[in-house]
Image (cartoon, rainbow, N blue to C red; front, side, top):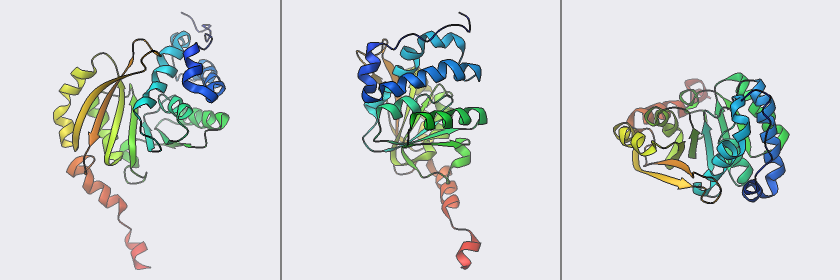
Length: 238
């Protein structure tokens, strides 16, 4: 495959999944295939499979996201899964969190071009924005890091009883089993492996769901969060 690989026509499932936002989904796919490749955000070999492997694979995550909640897409990269999720679910308030400037520039351009008023782009690492971003109901992530490390970044951003939804591959259950000790220390109380997108993507998308109790991030992050939320001495003197 070469860099001249063309974006294929959108499959019929895309019309069903994206509904009235199908034209915006097509525009996003075109941006990924053009600017996304030129800027090194996705590899040219991914262009022929952008719809099935990337856009639809991410969009079906919406099946397990509750209605009307706040979402933070950690390590959003080129906007996956955050942008497809935003196109499918205008009821969500989504933050795309990404540390690299060239990626946040691309994300901001996409958000403006597609008119996604319910999406905000924030440049930074998860550990840097703790206490600065409002805690969210749901954290999403895809191909960011091994589950134990990903949870260390994402779980502390949750509000009490929130959940992290991580798109993973065939070894999701093994990864989850190996991360149980780390997850427990982070205040995780329930875990599960879900399969979404039946009849839309084949194979179905695999999602690891990590649910927290009243202390997201555990004791260590509770102290950090409290410190970050505390007003400064200057403000208290007023």
